[in-house]
Image (tube, rainbow, N blue to C red; front, side):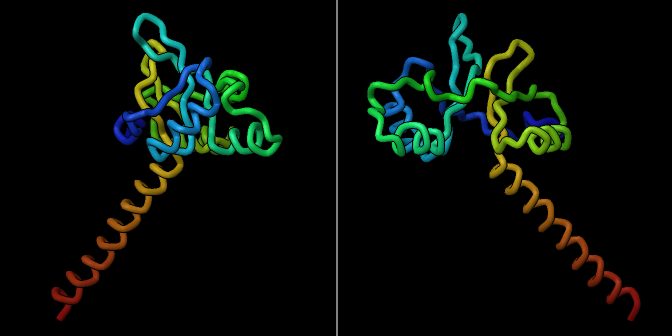
Length: 149
């Protein structure tokens, strides 16, 4: 299954020049723990970084800096791990594990942002799959009970 089938396509994003205060407000408004940082190129959002609620706490709040004076570009994680929308789900999970990230922006072949794959999305999908498998086992047991009477 390609990640394009399960990624969240409603990505909340910020620009490098947004203040970290604006970023925090966006996270609160949209109930998310991260923002993909994008540059716009001819109307296409190109991911260039990511900023998390943890970044805001550790980098801004803990040292008591002014969140209105510091930009997202100053704090974002610039070594952005990405995955293409046609990448396989299993390979993407392995990639996330190998590099130790909980979120992967999903891009098209042109590098434009199309979605985000998160650990939360994966856990939800895997829980549904496990539930389906459990129901299969139960159904098989009922079927055998009926046949073997």
